[in-house]
Image: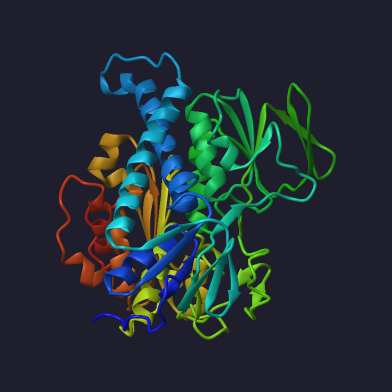
Length: 464
């Protein structure tokens, strides 16, 4: 099924005008063009947005380089004579940039092949049917807002010099000796993991009582144990009042009068929506702390205007933006797609060890359901995990005598298991449904199968 072509004529007549060429924006553009719509995609910087150029891809390339460094250090464990002579950060950056460049060229080719009009420049919503880009007005039957997010800081902490966000950290040309990471969420623990693997002394300062506080508490406990083993320091339940710096170091002043010093302070306290000065409020959209409020179909309160990705309250994940962008294109085309359920969106944190989860935590499940059952399968019983030398677990959360509503995993490379976990939760499978399926041996994927076998009442290699 394809959408009706735009009835307007002229250079600026489109079925959809999309403001923002990041994950949500370009996914919407590609799917809409595939469905026969005429699309304009407005981007002020580079196509691909934060995810491709300053987020997901470059940081995961760094994390892979960090994994290689750790593997080299530990080669003797596996009978391999090797030594780590050092980290050439320039060469690491060149590797990272080559990955980004290949993906960027591929994305540019995709957009060009779909006859999408890519408009370079700063765009602004000027009415419910127009986006103004400098002196050009783009008119569309529908407008999709996908302007993404920026790295936040805290009052009293100015980003400059030795105080930086992940944006500036990606441009470092040398490895600092000591790093303080402000924030123990996803971005904070990932960069802490990279810096430690590259040889820096790292301390995380987190205001909440535990690291990765959005995850199941059991995951936090295991991550904290692993970080202690890696000699990554952390201070949870600790507030930062301010930070100062001089030519030699940065000083982080904690509540209560204590101070910490380091060569670099990485501020990783989350990301905020890019909506200021873009005409959203003036055109009648409802904003809450800068976020655009939508219904489950990504529709704003203004007819014909949609919003997707990080500017919409919820998980700030590239694949959420992708999914919402595709959803909106299909919604406009009249395909009546199924709305996205936020709890069914998979989440992966790529530190070492990795964290992967989907669905409800045990606490959330007990708040919503009268009877809940859980099971933790220790990776000590998984052959491939023992080959890799990783510890961790797979935790299942189910409604008593009902479906699995949450899967939580921690361990090296466990992010690769999240696909099956999402299907289990999304399709409301019971442990009995999953336990009849065969999981290849020896794989880490077996750990998912073993956990479901145990929760179905027939444990096999259970080491709890």
